[in-house]
Length: 369
Ligand code: NHO
Image (cartoon, rainbow, N blue to C red; front, side):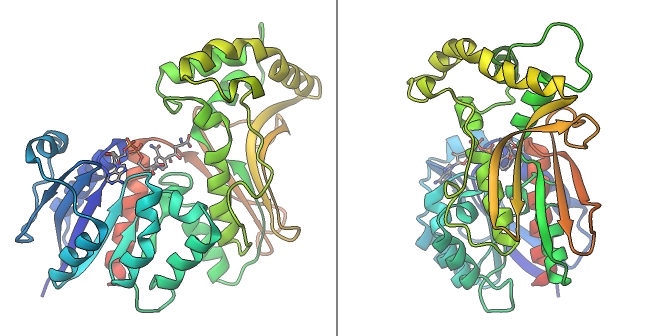
């Protein structure tokens, strides 16, 4: 008999819409014995609910359908009850960046509902939440739902599955190093490219180009403060076996000039940024004289428990220096791999590749239930 899986999707922004498209294609071509029905789709103030658990249509007009539905989303306890009452396995997809929703993961998992998510908040906030999530989860053979969050680091790149496989097969991770932000990758690949000739670019101009092209958050300070990278490092460090209290418990270099931290609008920030071009320009010049380039990187040194995020100089022959576009690169140094790192590299940002990471988690969950 076909296995029956009910799916609830919360969050229908860039990633949510791409996920719905990919899931729809997966369901259409699915030749396995699994019957997947999406029975709930919600964003902040609207929801589509299939009260009789018949599959909701997965169209590209989901935003319009949510507008027309006029139905309020269920509270998390009501959603748990709704999914449990279906009497079959259920997966919740959290495509939001909500900490409030992430705080409820332990309850969702304890109810036996599985979770797949690109939302970093649950795994990179206070350590207690991480511990509560994995105590409630069934990933290690206990009774709770499975939780997978591959897309929280490197979008669809196999970063978390790689580190888990290394650790589970008895290897010891000694160091993880790389470029973890698509935005920061783009900024520095443009600002300080290998083999640059001609007059140097102003950092503020590069930030403006990236902002206008939609590569940064609406307020670029949300990229430049380093916190997105710090959250990703927190997740990787915890998976490497380190105890990390929070993403602000280790050194994180912010590229926001101090006086611009508190200006109220993103426009004021952009207007003020050219005044600080010389500081970062000097760093790039200094690196160039040494035959190097500057890149915004994160690193975890496991034996010394040192985690840090910030600008570093790299020799132009180093793989980190030669990145292109908004690619991520993550190098794992382990006992087994010795001095030659295991390297994962490729597009690490964008709705389609992030949604791919989420769908691959859904497929992993389905294979386990
Ligand atoms: P949006 O477009 O803001 O959509 C969020 C949706 O969630 C909206 O529909 C909103 O109504 C809904 N929502 C928010 N709070 C809610 C609540 N409490 N209840 C119900 N609905 C709620 O965000 P995105 O871009 O679609 O992102 C979704 C999630 O994916 C976020 O957690 C984000 O951090 C994560 N994510 C996105 C990306 C990406 O490229 N867009 C990446 C990773 C994870 O790999 C990517 C990345 O790291 C990009 C990074 N900036 C970089 O490397 O430079």
